[in-house]
Length: 342
Ligand code: NAD
Image (cartoon, rainbow, N blue to C red; front, top):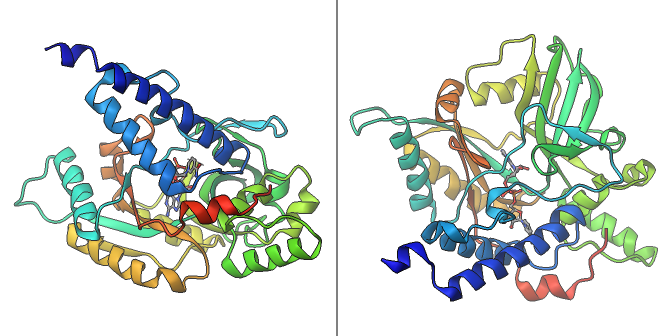
């Protein structure tokens, strides 16, 4: 009985230690763009804390990283309040078959579907390993770009985003009066190699990985410096939209964004049920090493937007999407050996 109400002292100490450590890592990763441990290590500790909190909800501290998105903002940029919050995505790390089945099972339960009902339609995409931005277009013109920040408030990086050639300053064709596009700013492998060669030539420190290079480059105080850093972009979703009807499926939203001139990754598919998702996961895992940019998994989204609305959100993530990760490629030693620079 006691166990139910007062968690063991060892668990309380561990939860508080994990909260402190994870908050320190999140600060280094999100705010300073200088991670000190690899993602796999962060994810492992995060899952340990989640499990402790699930077993003993009393151990959930008010500053627990399981309750929030991202990290603190840099004062150097003006804050931007997101009209539609920018959330995280729940992560599955299981094998292709069981990770896909776990997500599909949850979706079917939440939607009240029985075994007799047909398979759910999903949109599957790559999980780009960069950083999320919100692009706001008014009357087709890019007026503001912001980082995700803590999900509610991001940083105004408009000047820096304007230097990214792939991001249109004016949309093509008939754009709605207000359209917010969400996507990932990333750096390709080739551009990352070239940038590190340049760093070496000028006696600078190399960047630890393309994600870190992209995040550091986008959050430069001097946009002339950002202009020297080769950044790319993929659109994967919407924020606020005014004055236009939005296509009824996520896959059609991406087609719409592509038609408006935004870069959308061609490596995506519409699939049915857990079996369809597992096949996509397997196909992308085989492709991964040959892609010209880093991904850390795939993302599955319920394709019908009316069903997305029905499923809604839990605290920091939507119920209608999941990130199905691949095993980590980096090892602790290799990351810690390299000096990191912003
Ligand atoms: P996340 O990055 O795992 O997932 C959410 C993000 O996925 C979105 O914000 C978006 O930017 C991105 N994304 C990429 N492709 C997408 C697509 N097709 N559709 C939708 N979204 C897409 O979640 P998170 O909350 O930002 O952070 C967790 C990640 O950050 C983990 O991988 C974790 O390891 C890493 N992290 C590492 C450290 C560290 O110290 N190494 C610290 C904190 C976080």
